[in-house]
Length: 93
Image 1: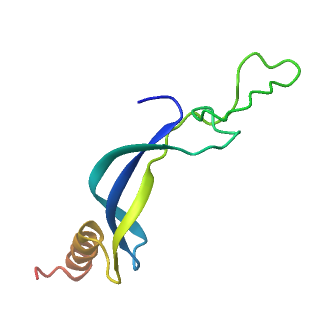
Image 2: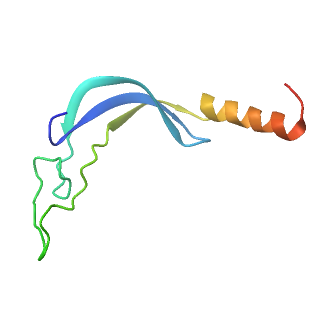
Image 3: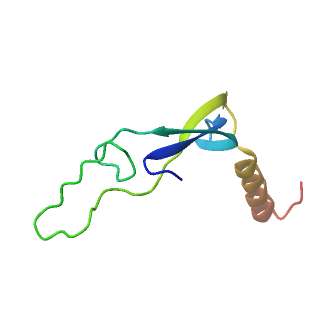
């Protein structure tokens, strides 16, 4: 990945469980433009006294684009809820 660029992805956001489920990546990369991001081209490195290395965040976060806003849980959370219900009730649904 190029320094300062974040990949763009498209997916669905589930409101009940607040999960974002990625459907696909666009292939486009964008720069966040933050001076406190070590991967951005706008990064301003100001080490303090006694610091030898930059302490800015180096984890690239993807730019998430929401395709659909779904008012229910995602599939993984729905399966987990049913599994918990089966364990607690000793019934198989």
